[in-house]
Amino acid sequence: MSKPILVLNCGSSSIKYQMIDAENEELLAKGLVQRIATGTVGTIDHEVLADEQGEFHVDQELPDHETALGTVFQLFRDHGPDLTATFAVAHRTVHGGDRFAAPTRIDNQVVKTLRELSPLAPLHNPPAIAGIQAARKLLPDVPHIAIFDTAFFVNLPAEAYTYAMDIGTAGRTKIRKYGFHGTSHQYVSQQVSKLVGRGDLKQIVCHLGNGASISAIDSGRPIETSMGLTPLPGLVMGTRTGDIDAGIVGYLHRELGWTISEIDNELNKRSGMLGLTGHTDMRDVESAIEAGDPRARLGMDIYVHRLVFYIGGYAALLGHLDTITFTAGVGENSPEVRSEVCARLKVFGVELDEEANKVRSKQPRTISTPDSKVQVLVVPTNEELAMARQSVELLSDN
Image 1 (tube, rainbow, N blue to C red):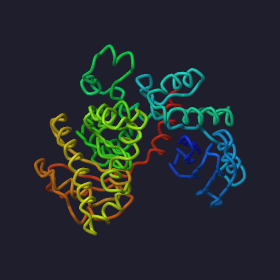
Image 2 (tube, rainbow, N blue to C red):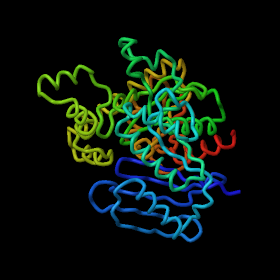
Image 3 (tube, rainbow, N blue to C red):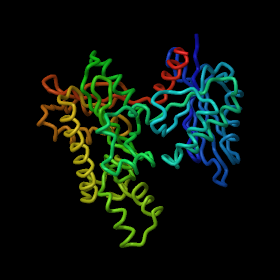
């Protein structure tokens, strides 16, 4: 029996969505809504991938998420797939704090708690809540499920999630490491366990996209991850610094007179590879390196150095290393990054198969040699499919 799951990812001015049949894991439709509440004409692109396939475009004013979703749902009614058969709606929700450790069926109390958690993710949780409220109003008789980016890491060991600051202050302000990209890290690590045929693996997963994070996973349980209270720390990212000296915040304020908002903008939106190289897309960085740009070369060296630093530390925490997996946009599509990282991991017995590494494929694959002491893999992430699976599991258990 078909189980169509509508997966929603609501940003402040955009909505990404997919309709997935969780029974056979077929992608039925997908779309993108842009320019919500921007004062400009919004756009919606809706693509039907099952039955009568087609692509449909709408330009109209989109003053709020309810209007945007209402228009999307009209596109479903006009062109398919059939919305009335929807089994559940899965909502990507960035921050669940320490209150949500698993997918959760949404009711008014859950929405109230999400509002209370909004200070932890002021850019992400409010638009997610707006999308949840709009979708619940438009599809009131369908179960709505919150899938949290932070849930996979809620039960990190205390020594991993606790910051070395006054315990009372941290407790009052809910400051701790929460981690992000949890849906991706969980999905990819589970795929690796299936591919290798073992549930007791000591894994490192490198989620390398415009946002980037790394996790250490022992027998399916995460023991460390690089992002923290916010998605800012850890690896070098497209526009985020990753790890920096926390004293830089006060220094910028004293020396340049910058406000907290200006500093926050600098560290989150003007730094990372953009600040180092002038590019956010790794393909552009690699092209600049080929053209002899020393700034791009330094940026790549810093990017790789930080990643290798984390892999080495996580290997020590795990006590042994079975697999290293690359995923997300850069991880899946940049053989250059994978090669440069693995070349620095020979101390762990990593041997990269350079020819296998160059193969471009959307399929999970091993790119290390048979003699490598650590199996290196590329596994495409699929957060939407993971969300659909988790929604079905939750509803099946209830």
